[in-house]
Image 1 (cartoon, rainbow over the protein chains, first blue to last red):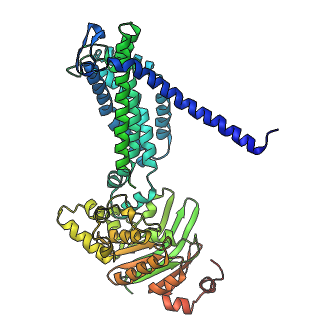
Image 2: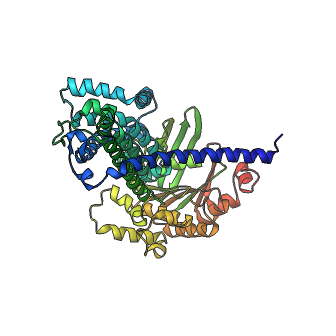
Image 3: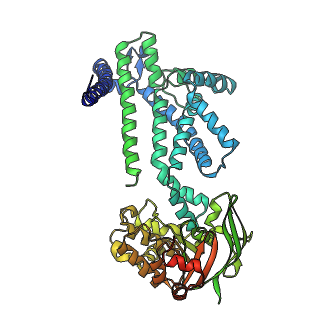
Length: 275
Length: 251
């Protein structure tokens, strides 16, 4: 028989080991990636176009394309998602409409990305005739990240204390002014957190982008040009066995990009959060 | 007696539950009226009818009349936004917005379309002076209002209402979250603001009602039991229930 104290210590050891294991897995993965990828990274890799399908040269157009695709997706999804969240949290009476919207948002959030890709391919690429393009890819990504943005924004708006709304309304502000000037500024950090999550998802998305934005190695010059994101490039390099070194180097660039975005956004969120 | 607010045969329900029964009373201009009574007696609900904050609760319906300056507040053509500018409200818990002291005070004038940017600092200073807060905050108007103490925050909330030139000031237990010294400052402030403003205050603190009000109304279970000059009501209550309450036999 163990004493209570011994049990306590055993539990502590097990939990501690699990925690260390988790960190270890992360460190090993990152370390391996960096060890394999860093040697191939230099200024030329970041600033040049690829040559021989990526065997030589750099990933500059793909960095650009990643930004463009994410940008298009955000421009489309943020206003719609935040607008819908404001409506659901502030205006909609609890009823079948809100229940429906919530139900479909949940479903949308659980759909595997390849299915979004397939839908985007059939609908945007072929039916609407946008072809493999930034527009098709951005639209598809927008659909994918919409639920995340909507739900986090709705939660953020709902957690704004009721007293802010009452205080504002009691001063004779309209409901619109109250939402715009008292509620949204307080909800902004939460809304931004949702957008960051969405950006992370969009930047890393491969299947849906491959099916809708294509894989042109040229930098896109317009919304209807095909574009290859970093993750698609990484996929092609690895699958077609073009260059393992370049694949790892691309992975390092991709991860760094995600980290930079997260880091900046977290700083921003912290600055916007009232003490 | 000419009333700033006149309540006639007023009833209010939350869904099936009747919270106010046949209330009739007059709130005189330029005086302090206190609502007293045990928790759940309807005094906050009655207060919230004067700026129609009860509208925010969907299940509320009502019957009867409440007149402000002789006009029925619940007439269909009443502009609720304009009404709430005239009838300001201070809440139980200080609720400054998470923005600077200056922006808190300027919030009201800004939403009411104060175009003249140069007028805002004047309005802010005047309102803060009126609320006896100016000397404590004049050097840190850009700091977040949430950094102020609870008592200062409550005076800020009063200043915020004064900045929109309200005529009536509703206070829903404004001192219940404050320490005795902050409470004293708010009471002094209420004293100063009269007779320029008509003040209605809900309070759990009978001594407070006795100190600051000209008229006191006692509510119980949604009924207005007694209303009269404060001194008379406390010294010579006309109803047994009033006497029981103010002598501490219940409540």
